[in-house]
Length: 170
Image (tube, rainbow, N blue to C red; front, side):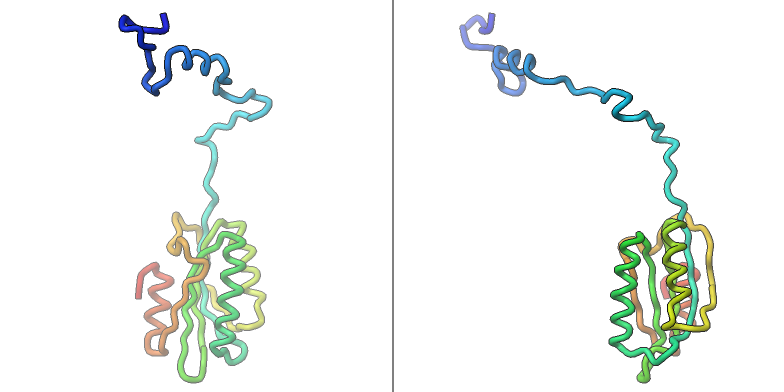
């Protein structure tokens, strides 16, 4: 009975002869659920997404901040933010003499953001830190950016930082 009326073997949709398909079925371990003691039951609806927060501030560099200092700051910020899953944007008010003000927004899971914010507050490279926002947020604005960066002229800083804190593009 492995053949049809013409004597040719019957084949399955996968092109297996019925005899080969039966042998394959006998040697295949059935897929199924793992025993409860191996994989604990967890209601997927009860899994909560991490609470997101956003933190924004303006500050003044403690010492003159030149291009090399800014590159070092951005490199270190991106490394730390990547480690903690934090994203954000830094705006630097800059003229021919260097950087004069910073405006920054960082966002992430509340627990991770708290660590990054503590580092920002303790950083001796800036002073006069003024918190502009520190609140829960429903979603990230800087997805994929460990630290976006924009240099702005003094004439644009107020508008650019205001837009940053309001969630708009300048």
